[in-house]
Image 1: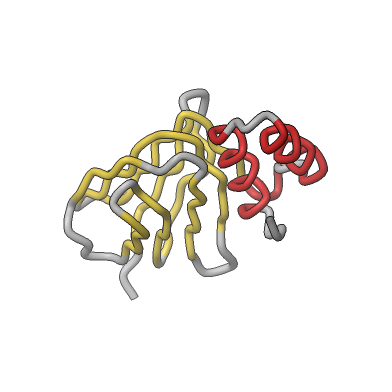
Image 2: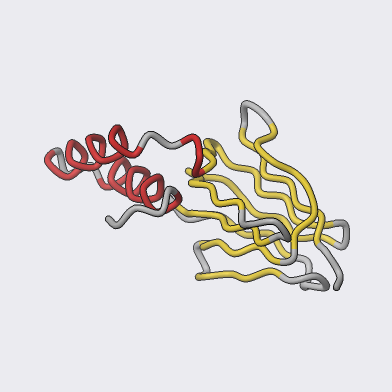
Amino acid sequence: MAELQVALVSVEREIWSGEAREVNTRTTEGELGILPGHTPLLGQLTAGATVRISRDGGDIVAAVHGGFLSVTDEGVTVLAEIAELSDDIDTARARTALERARSENDEDAESRAEARLAAAGEKV
């Protein structure tokens, strides 16, 4: 089966790169699933999106906060302002941030905390 070359990059550093079967995320235009041979596109990621990179050996899941998704003939690049892999997320801290954001009616902080919890596999 054909594979995609995928790079997940934050402003600070490369988070992950490698081959994958599929990439799923949410852009301002809606949910998006990318398979090998996908039409080239540029999409803006929604605030508090998750990115799921499906590959042999298990999925890579990340919470991303702001940024863009680029699909070209060479592969998929996710360029996020901030990105955290699910394994690196402190769920207790994310829950505290979610509660604080809700009490302060801070929608941006709330969506970031929800994305972190979702990426870590926690119910929101």
